[in-house]
Amino acid sequence: QVQLVESGGGLVQAGGSLRLSCAASGGTVSNYKMGWFRQAPGKEREFVAAFNWSGSGSYYTDSLKGRFTISRDNAKNTVYLQMNSLKPEDTAVYYCAAAFPSGRYGYWGQGTQVTVSS
Image (tube, rainbow, N blue to C red; front, top):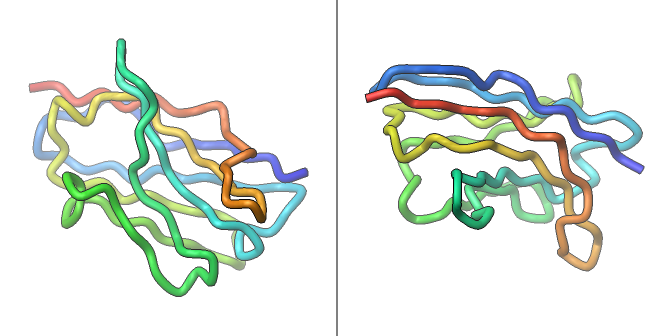
């Protein structure tokens, strides 16, 4: 069973950047469909970005295209989320997830808090 641990969150001013990391153990990230989600206070968790099943491509929620980039380092068994031009509305807890073969995301990290000040 894969275990995921996120890191890299923190407090940043609007317009700044952060890179989140998701370190995996008990499984290989290249064998899973990996994705990032976020949950803002008082809101439901929403999709941010993910790789496709082959890992050769990625897709994003429309509103974040061009600012966020998902990447992967197989040697480090780690998935990243580079976030640029951050806005106060990006404030949320960010979660890394791995999908079952069915496509459902069944493995989740504990989340890392990102706070963007105006």
